[in-house]
Image (cartoon, rainbow, N blue to C red; front, side, top):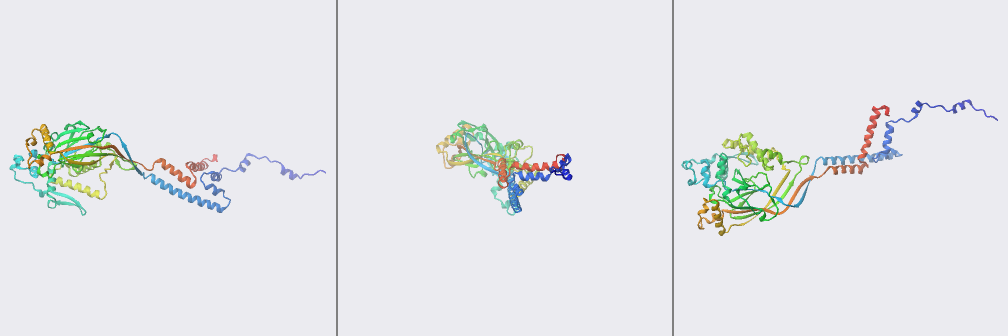
Amino acid sequence: MAVQQDPQFEKNMQVQPINDEDKEKEKPRGNCVTFFTYFAESTSFMGIPKIWASPRLVFKVMWAMFFLAATGVMIAQLVQLFTTFYSYPIKTSVKLGFTSLPFPTVTLCNMNPIMLSKAHMLDCSIQKLLKIPSSYQSDDCVNATDEVDLTTFTEYVCDEDGCYEEETSGLDDAFVRKQMIADYLGGEYEDIRQSVGHDLETMLIECSINGRKCSSSNFTTFLSRDLGNCYTLKNKGFKATKSGPESGLSMVINLESEDFIETFKTGYGLKVVIHDNGTRPFPGSEGFTVSAGSETSIAMKLVKIERLGGRYGSCNDSAEFERKFGVAYSERACREFCLRNFVIESCKCQPEQEASVNNSIKICTTDTEWKCEDQVYNKFIDESSKGLDVCKCGSPCSEKVYEPSVTSRLWPVLQHVRTLEQQTCLIDEFSPKCNYSAYDFENIELRTTSFLKLKVYFNSLNFESIKEEPFYDTERFLSDIGGTMGLWTGASILSLAEFLEILLEVLFWCFCPKSK
């Protein structure tokens, strides 16, 4: 029996051709929702796939809260890491080394700046201030009866109430006299000031460096405001290969005590400053005193200090400073030159200090100029007390510090004094020591305290190196960033590329429709 087919059924069963437009309409379009679905399912940020794939709403909320909390903690720690890194912290490392060591520069000054036998070369006002005996004064000064009026001297002093002008009545007489002597000496010609001071050529009896003989020609001369002629050892390039007293500098000095002026005759001695090669000494305020009638040993220890500059801290390189002033940089020298420039700008003259290097500018020599100079100094002190660093003088980036250990003993014995006096006469036949014949009560103290022996050496060739280094370098910074991101969100640096992929996809969707 034949089954009759329904025509409508057959029509519906026929395969209808599908054109390209229908196919495009039925194909899921690649849009932002589709891409974000792909991102949520494949991202390496832990928590996002859980939020997307959790079957229940409560789990989605729970994972969203976990992810937001972890992300917040991660961001807080990253902010702290960036803050620490860009504060550029440093650490200090201390190391001990052993090698041959560069020998320092030694500067020495006789504590008596003016010789009695040469004081007549000075201006009469200075002779009166020095209270020179009439037999040693110049003829025009002997006939002059006018004394220098000390009451004209004023000094700016600072205390808790501020800075103010102090008259002579409130100052010590010895202090006033020495200050006025120094001020008046500043007005003398440089060659006269050198001539009236002690000459190392007659002072130096014996000298050796590492066992080799040296002489006054191995020293350079410069003028100190307070101590007159000072002498600096020229030893650039010399290195100590052994430690101990026999491997350093040894000198026997004739202090020429019989030529001391009463104004400065409170004691006999030598001012010694040990400093790095090329730096400028300031014997008026630095160093230590070596007593007469003694053998003084100065055992040194070298400490090398290296500081980080730039973004890690403030330190000054010596190159520019040395080109400008002709000496290696030191914080003290920087402040002295800075103050000198302030005085020149305000007073149109330069102070008579160890820092004076420009001979074309006149020295401050009048009462008005000295008062102006004092006002500049006290203004600087007042500003410094308020925390203002007007000179911007930081520590040097590289510095050598020689830490001294000083010991002494009585020297010489009486028998050796006569030998030293004979050596002195061979150097200077006009020395008063050539006239001594026998010891008596009046001259024995003067003769035994007219000499001293000085030894400068390294206690050992071990040195201490103190070096500043970055505490938080770039490698550690990046490592901490990766550790923080991995701990809280399971992400890495490559995970950030996923956000770049999202950004690029959005840009393609918005600006390149054909690539959708």
